[in-house]
Length: 133
Image 1 (cartoon, rainbow, N blue to C red):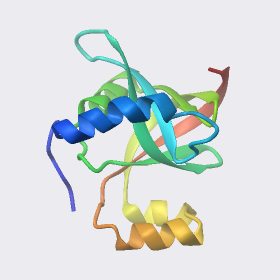
Image 2: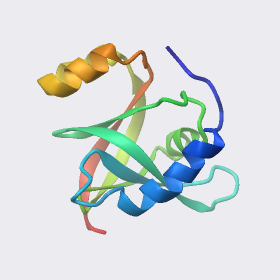
Image 3: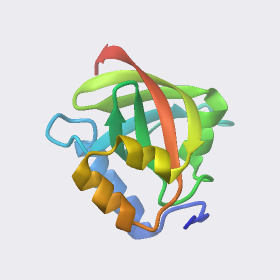
Image 4: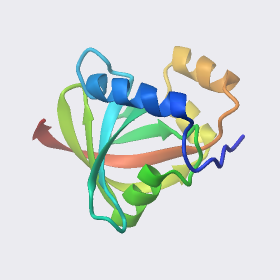
C-alpha cells in the first residue's frame, strides 16, 4: 500500500519535532536523523526516520510515500548524511526497493512486524562512516 500524501498531518509534524531530539542517539537505535538539503531553497534540514540497518546500508520505511520532500531532496542530491546511534554516516545511492529485499535482511522479530504492515514503500541508502556527530 502506497500513501502518496505529500505532507504528514499536523500530529505527525508535532511528533517529528519531539522525535528529532531523540533520533540518532545511542538510546534510540530504531530512529535515525537524515540531514538533507532543499532542492530549490538550499536550506539544510534534519528529518527523523525509522531505519533498519544492514552492514552497508540503511533501509527506511516510507509511510508517507515516495513523494515526501526529504526523500525528493535526498534523491536529487544523490545522498546526504544520516546520524544513527551517535555516529554520522555519509549516505548515497538512495534507491526505492521492494519489501521483499527489506524482509530478507530483517531479523525474525522485525520480519514478522513488517510482514503484517501493509506498507510497501522503502528506500535503501548506502552508508559509509563519516565520524561522530
